[in-house]
Image 1 (cartoon, helix red, strand yellow):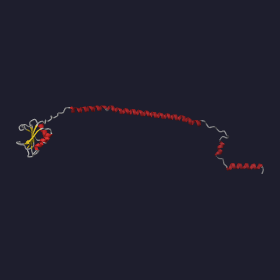
Image 2 (tube, rainbow, N blue to C red; image 1 turned 90 degrees about the vertical axis):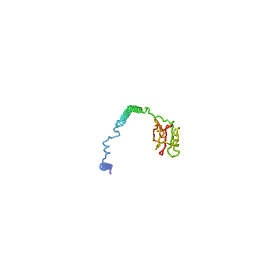
Image 3 (cartoon, rainbow, N blue to C red; image 1 turned 180 degrees about the horizontal axis):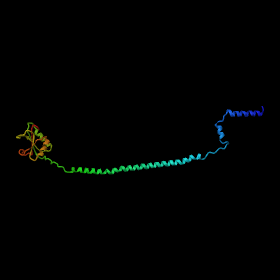
Length: 213
């Protein structure tokens, strides 16, 4: 086989392989459509600069908006606090009037207590008292004398009752001395009082003790 024949066979084989066994794919199409050679179109500079420009513009705008929002919010809160303080201070000024009225009411209610009250005159214990035992119980009159002396009465004497027609324990007193008889009755526990202007003798009071004492 000569050289020419061998080249023909190789060319035929190459055409057969390239056309039938390896069909054309996307890479072959890209190569056919794209620029041929080492030099391609340069990318645009805006693609690299645009992100930085956006950052430089957006960030200051956002910062300004945040500062404006915070400032306006703090101003609103300050205004609300001031209005609340004024509202709370206003009632305190109006509450002073009732306190003055209450003070006036207290002053008027206290006036009656300043009026002098009538006090009963003190009963004199510098009086002569005679205790008469009208029972058969020994020492009954002496016991009553001891009670009166313990209460401050010094001129007290004891004796037996004779000629006194009384059925119950009685304190006899001179006219105008009932208060003194009541005081003696409180000490001895006697409530039966009788005015007598003839049978008292030298005594201011006569106490006749009977079985009910």
